[in-house]
Image (tube, rainbow, N blue to C red; front, side):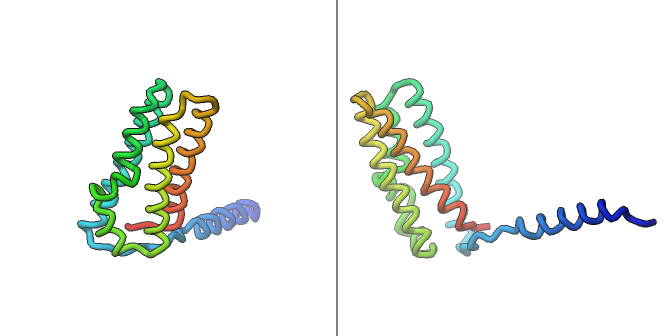
Length: 144
């Protein structure tokens, strides 16, 4: 059986795309217990972002601020075990995480002012800063 040269070319192109689509993020080894704890925290971060956007959509700015500060912001560090987790992370990964928490606290302040002139735009810009840190970390690192 002979392959059509065009089909062969397409197969080679697809194979090369598969090879180049490898996960090049830095693998961060950590004990299973810590990995599971961190993944649970990140799932809660996603749920918190979902709650925040729902509160914003319903013009419940103080509630959005409370979720941001208590579940994502600097006030959440102790409940997340951040000091223990940072010990097993590369320094830049930990710095990105800390910046995400700081950005969440800045969002909480902006959300409380959302009813002021231009305040909602500032709140959305601040929320975008939070999500930028999430994306940066997830783009650079993996734990499993």
